Amino acid sequence: MESYLKDQFGDVKPKNSSEEALQRWRKLCWFVKNPKRRFRFTANLTKRSEAEAIRQTFQANFRVAVIVSQAALQFIQGLTDYKVPEEVKAAGFQIGADELGSIVERHDVKKLGGHGGVEGIVDKLSTSIT
Image 1: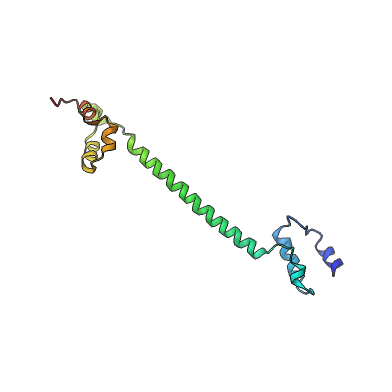
Image 2: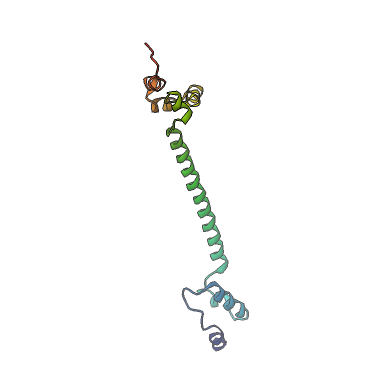
């Protein structure tokens, strides 16, 4: 039996064998005296595939979490980067009505501070509060 197996499976190494070679090895060794003893040092292919599936699941979940966090950071930074529309610049102002409306509607103190507070808004509207 040993010589037959060596002739048929010379490519099966004790370590780092391919899964296909190990599967062929187990398929042809269906009739052995003590299979537990015969295969005790051979890799458990079902557990190996289950571990690979779990690893891929974790990797996919981690990839989704990274993409979501990057999108959230980009969204947050996008709110702080205000660009003045061309129509507003042509009218002589430095802040648009939509931006002012969103600050007032949401009571957004961060955006208000980003524009320089009340004094900054007054300067951007070219008005006087005195």
